[in-house]
Image 1 (cartoon, chains in turn purple, orange):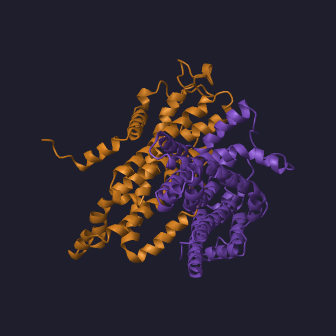
Image 2: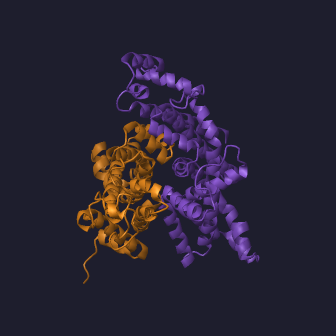
Image 3: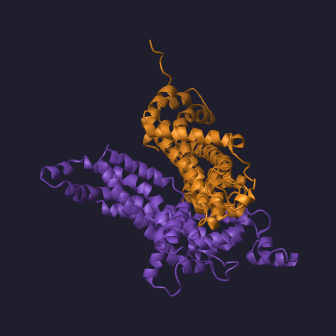
Amino acid sequence: MLRYLMRRIGGLIVVMLLVAVIVFIIARVVPGDPVAVMLGSSATPADVAALRTRLGLDQPLVVQFLIYLRQIVTGDLGQSLFLNRPVLQAMADRAELTALLTLMSAAIATLIGVPVGVISAVRRGTLLDQAATALSMFAASLPSFWVGLTLIEYLAVKMPWFPVAGWGDPGAGFGEHLHHLVLPAIALGLPNSALIIRFTRTAMLDVLGDDYVRTARAKGVGPMGVVVHHALRNALIPVLTVIGLTIATLIGGAIVTETVFGLPGVGNLIVSAVLRRDYPVIQGSLLVISGIYVLINLAVDLLYALVDPRVRF
Amino acid sequence: MAAPRSPARQLLARLLRRRLVLFALVALVVVVVAALFAPWLAPYAPGRMDIAHRLAAPAARHWLGSDEFGRDTLSRVLFGAQQSLLVGALVVVLATVLGTALGLLAGYVRRLDAPLMRLTDALMAFPDILLAIALMAGLGASMFNVVLALGIVYTPRVARIVRGAVLVLRELAFVEAAEALGAGDLRIMLVHLLPNLLSALIVQGTFIFGYAILTEAALSFLGTGVPPTTPTWGNMIATAQQYMGQADWLILVPGGAIVLVVLSLQVLGDGLRDALDPKLQRLL
């Protein structure tokens, strides 16, 4: 287990190094001189030269990359060009909303995905099963921003049950924040329930044919008991994996959803950074989010080993 | 005596046995034909303004209503189909070519395997949409750049599947035979391995087509995709946002078009996967 862990962490470091290279390259493919873009049209050549020196852009690329790497390792992701504060700080300020949105969406995706998947497997081959499969494909075909706009139109404007946009007043309580996140979480969670439906169905089908399920049935355990206590318990292991991966995907989806609902989260920060060409923020958020993504993947694999005693590394 | 059926005919027969797949195929053909013949089918030019009938609800004059400039929604959705389908198709081509090349090299040339796979791991460490908007920030908003960015985003998926298939195929006798006959690496990859990857590539291409349409729409919605002057489905939804309260058809029509096409592609991809070689099903 320890050796496996060390190997995985080694691999993770290699991948994150490559991620840093990609992030570094993306900021360098900008057409034209990024410094001229940053300073605007009123900058004199002397200003441009001064900023280039200050940012180290007059150094060879390899040196620039090493400087960049040293900054990352020391936790310095640079300064936002527009917000006048460190990138990491700007992200941290908005992290609560995005984390909450991601978790709520994951909860909704799970609450749709697991029951539908279970019913689909238990009623295999029936109309209900086909309906569940159709639902999963339909969900996967939904653009989350479109679902969001439609929800706003019908459940916030025509029926004023939920707030149209935003996250409530700065001093708003937790409950009010949650109320603001209901529609965004549905918009993000519904499309992402598709994969959970499919995985739950497959995992349940695998388990339902097993001997121990037959034994439980033979011993007179009722149908609900068999499904919930015996089958679902074991099917949950692969389902947990897919929920973990869904959480990672949801972080990306939050970028679009936060824009639809005007939520001041990390996604919103990224979109405004892209529109304003605030490169330090774009680079920093790419690094942080891919880091979280990679860590979630690792955590899911390790969880797998913890939950299932048969998995040995 | 019945003529022996070709593999393609058999595949088609197996594919169409599922009614849902048949519906999906028909829907896709209709959409593609409608997009190709948009200049003849559309009742109006996509940019033509009918100022007297702005934000008109669906009626005889504008079947699917009109937008804030009185432009015909049906006509714009038809022309939008051209853009959205073109972007999707080009992304599939780009991702398939790049991904196949990387996957063949990683799977067949042993010393390239680890470096190329770590590269795909790194690319897949970004959520799709995040990598896409970051690339668009660097490249600038244009249709060509959307294709380029999404092509890069979906390349690793193809590369992984191709590599997985090549690792299985390279152990088979026919590859060994070709090696024994003195065929070079390039010849083995292109002549012997590539044709065997075709079905896996077709299935994956179908799914990527759908993802690309969804992600393109999201990029355009965020203002980092195809410039708003071109009526793609995503752009139509983005501009319609402000008029949503008065004219919900402006959102429902292009959104419905996206769902119809992406859903059909998923059903088709699923059907293809089931109908194709069962040996490949494990890999996809």
